[in-house]
Length: 146
Image 1 (cartoon, one colour):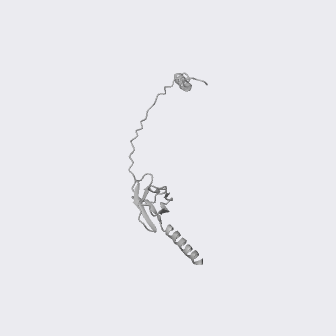
Image 2 (cartoon, helix red, strand yellow):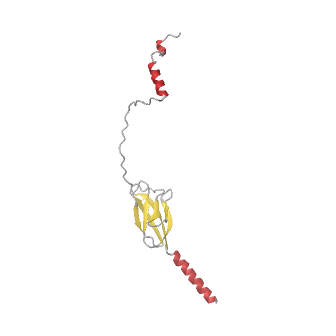
Image 3 (cartoon, rainbow, N blue to C red):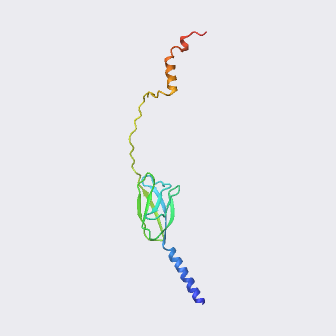
């Protein structure tokens, strides 16, 4: 009876060890390919799964993925997406460099000018028109009050 328990215990431990060995620990840093600075909050996702993580404030990451995973997608706002093949191994140290995306914006031209306010039902427009019309009558330099 004791032999059966020992064999069962050894088989259970072997199953747990082999199941844990099927995971790969990925760790490393995601950097800008030009400046070499770490990219904070870049996304790392295994293609076809919901397994992933984000880099910390300095661009470092670490997470465990199933060994069956083959493709890691790395993305960050303002940078091209990069796909990396994952090779089997216990721990993989990655130094991922992302290339900045060239974003072109259209030119904006700002011209000085006076726009005419044309809403006829606005009482403020009518008040300003009356003040402009009576400007000369109410000029304090034209009157002798003292």
